[in-house]
Amino acid sequence: MNTSSILIMAAILLYLLLMLLIGVRFSKNNTSTDDFYLGGRKLGPLVTAMSAEASDMSSWLLMGLPGVAYLTGICDAAWTAIGLALGTWLNWFFVSKKIRRYSQQIGAITIPDFFSKRYHDKNMLNCIAAIIIVLFFIPYTASGFAACGKLFASLFQVDYMAAMIICAVIIVAYTILGGFLAASTTDLIQSIVMTIALLTVVLYSANAAGGFDVVMENTQKLPGYLSLVNTHDPASHTAQPYGVITIFSMLAWGLGYFGMPHVLLRFMAIEEEDKLTVSRRIASVWVVISMAVAIFIGVCGLAVSKAGVIDTLTGSDSETIIVKIAGLLSTQNFAAALLAGIILAGILAATMSTADSQLLVASSSVSQNLLSDTFGIRMSQKTSLIAARITVLVISAIAVFLARDPSSSVFSIVSFAWAGFGAAFGPVVLCALFWKRSNKYGAFASMLSGGVMIFVWKYMVRPLGGAWNIYELLPAFLAALACNIIVSLLTKKPDASIEAEFERAMR
Image (tube, rainbow, N blue to C red; front, side, top):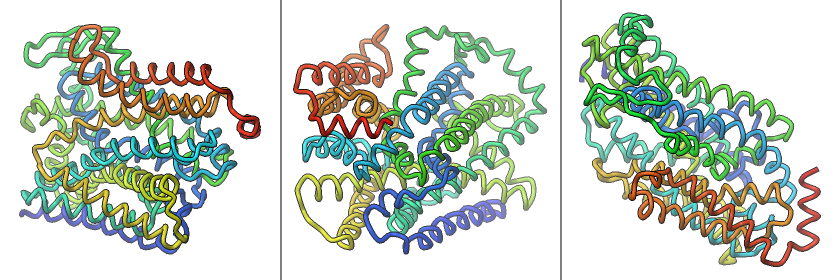
């Protein structure tokens, strides 16, 4: 291991140590499951905004988005980013305050708990919501562990399994110790590290390519590279049309936000409802800027390859463009090597900030919603807190097992899981908050149809190609919304007490 590698490792280890110290710091604040899962509703506006977005973006922001732009230009990446930016703003503007007020009024501390108490349903909604969360979040968490393992294995030529387990242990440790407050505070720090990484890489890569003018000259020579209606085909060096159906398919990513449990929990956890306006502005600005910078990193990275400074990347290797640029930076001097370590810690931060939130949500679904609410196992606050922490351990162990193969396709599950949550929970959340006539039968039908349609469209309809080649979230979301409305109208209207709660929450 050379000097630059040692300095990079030192920067990353210091970062990981800081995450553990935060977990220890907040461990004394958890005296109940409400503290562990929702932080006692004590989050400030900055922590709420940045932890929500950091837990949302994951390593996709620093690896997937630049990689897509590097290979095919800005079109695919830009329409996806536009969809996500719109979804972020709409979710904050329409959903955040209502779910904060409603969840506090009925005493809900998890998303399945909110569905159950909103519709005065004892077990049905709790059970199916908890099962959906576990079904989609365990492999989602596994992909995060795998990303950490692959990062260390590729950087330092160490054993993938050992690196992955060490990262998983650190994530689990600060999550178990500090719960929601630790996860949210570390997410804030991780968003700062991610921002530093994005800005440093875009400036350094542009300089390494010969300046921003050279970058733009290079991309203008590539057919379709800077177009929003064409993509660049690197194999044939031609522009390929990007149809209207594909554009709507990419914009549909934004619908996923309405059903993301780890994002919705941040809305529920803020200390005061009025502060969500400040959080919305911070979150929306950060998301737009960070995704724009990430896309431009891919553009600059290709110019660096064209200049012969780094090798040309193909296929999935394009997702390592930030790693390659950080490696190039580390060879400059002592300070540059430490800065490269911070950049790589940014990739780690993006992954960890999502994994810790997913662990908390999945564990709450098992210990709180299944064991306590559905099966009626009564526990004291202390016992319940222990059960919550044990659940985090068990779920993490399963996720580590799923991620044990470095060549596994667990990463492909990320977009599938996003679609799953968006379709299964999104329409239910919107109807619960905006439609007094919706009832528990409509909510149940919506969750079930949304979850089933994701599988049907992904594996049976979308392979037909052509007009059917639409991201499964869009048709599944619409089907679930239709089921919610139709079933609610065909069944008994909610009781007067449910309608009264709705009216009080909507004031």
